[in-house]
Length: 95
Image (cartoon, rainbow, N blue to C red):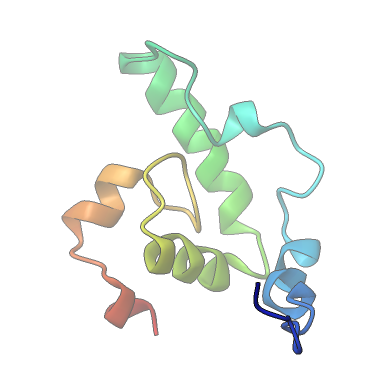
């Protein structure tokens, strides 16, 4: 059995930006679709989410995070999954 001699440092600083997010405290239902959501309902929910993102001081950091981890769901940094994919954003573009 190997002995652990070093543990990684706290990673809190990696997530500190989320404390300043405009969406903090809002329900996830604004940013993530319920099963089967389509059409006008989806478009209206996404526009609501984008409005929150539009006034967010960490919008760019949020988008960078979503792109860097390949987030497959929801509105992050003011962009939907399809918008992130269509724009060709990649981990390199987010850096």
